[in-house]
Length: 107
Length: 115
Image 1 (cartoon, helix red, strand yellow):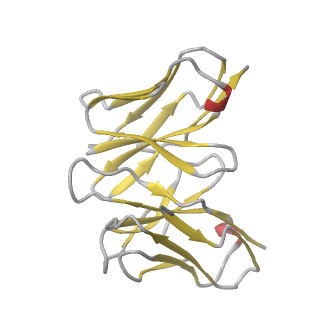
Image 2 (cartoon, rainbow over the protein chains, first blue to last red):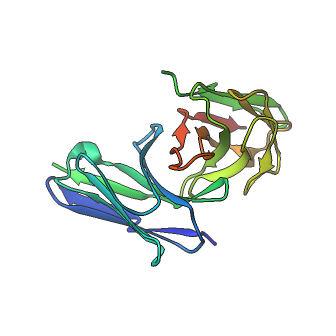
């Protein structure tokens, strides 16, 4: 049983498309974390948010605490955005992770 | 800034051998974590340390031990390696004592194969 569910598992998009990745969770949380992992690479933090919305460049993250749901949006997608995007929720001192969404952006 | 440094980056062991994975962070974070990442599964917590001097089990602690040597360093030890412990191991740190919480910073990972 995984407390964090991501959808879709895999996503292929054309360059320039608007992309949405979803994260739903079943536990009470104090924060939600979006991360990015390139193939064979390390894990990089994108956003940590507890409410509302955050924006950084072409990336936007939103969270709805009442619905236990978060979305990560990528505007004007680019091949360099190809990576696995991971959602994690913070409960107490522990983070619980989704299995990730693998994104491929085709030129 | 180095952030989180893990050593080694790669290691091959034989079943029954022991080894220690080292992790150090230079961000003065209180919380440190050890995860394993396996294909098709999310990152799973092995052990964590909420502050210097404390350690707690995570989701998959069996076969592992940890030491929070000081605020900077958090090591993971495999006492008798088993093939099921073949995985990629990540160390991470974060600061959760004050709001807004700081996101986790990850090391580059250790690719460990047990033959």
